[in-house]
Amino acid sequence: MHEWLEAASGRLAEEAGAPAGELTLDQGQIDELLELARVAAHESGERINAPLVCYLAGLAHGRHGGSLDDLVDAVIGKQP
Image (cartoon, rainbow, N blue to C red):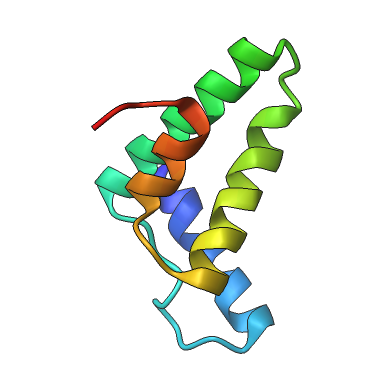
């Protein structure tokens, strides 16, 4: 999975004009996004919500900063 994901992130960076290696995910981010996708798919009853909410989390994180953990927690309702 990681090899495919790394290749995809490289192609996305190139297409976006971003420096190589800028669009990477560490294992913690991968785990958070997979949890977000799991909850979205199961709690909403619509599997298609999983990639869409992950995209929205990415937009929020990229455009407004903040912790990805906090953004995911806001959607899935984790309490500190």
